[in-house]
Image (cartoon, rainbow, N blue to C red; front, side, top):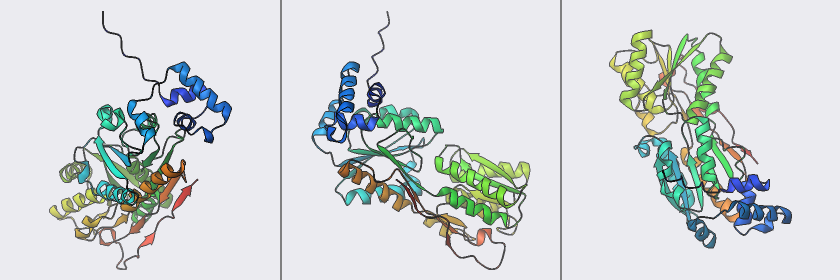
Length: 364
């Protein structure tokens, strides 16, 4: 006879559903913060805890006794080379800077979604709070955040929206939509028939926002512009070039190429240079992110500059303040980006000036 499967561990969400309250309230009661909760609610939580047989992890008991002065950062990325990405590097630098100002250290874990169960921090609590950067389909990303919420720690979701029912959680993201709309409006000025957008096969929420906003801007500016989205095996030079080359050989040269990020746009520029295709004369090219590598492009690359370092700093500040006060100061914060047109997409001899494409937004 096969061994019976071990019983599923009771989570804070289970207690919240049984008591008719929220996971944040359950966390407050079980962590000795009943003064923030009504008496009747606290009683229901304790009764549900006893009825379900909830047993906190040993690490969780230790966590209540003393701060670890550490924040966990989980990056859900199938690539083992995720630290080579300039956006990720700038974001982590900002997180480290923001946490260091308050004497918190950073514990970093990178993992594909299907290996998250092996991440040490999700098996035993090592931190006071969590920052998470997710990838994959929306339903999977939601499930990842919910699983982390079961640890009973506050969570900052970076570059994605936190699930609406995750109470002890906030979101901070860039205004990718405003940046992509600026790109679309700019490219539409040359009356294009077909535009190619380069994105990786991995589903990043920021890339999805950029694609949606680019389509919206093109449709608003002029009907009949075809947007072809090429999903490359990865964001690397060879994979991007091979995918774009196959498309050009089969469908002909597009009027413009919009890179989902600068890395992919630079690969396109190099391909066009190798084939003797004039940029921007025959095809216009844009990127996204505005990190230092785009300055090496010839012609100069049109891009959208994003404050990735500040994104990390603000995420760190939000989490530290939550750990001090018991509540997040805001539920959602959007940082502005800046459209920076340059020679690679120029259609007139007059260069346009940099201009902000969005305003910072905070939702309480």
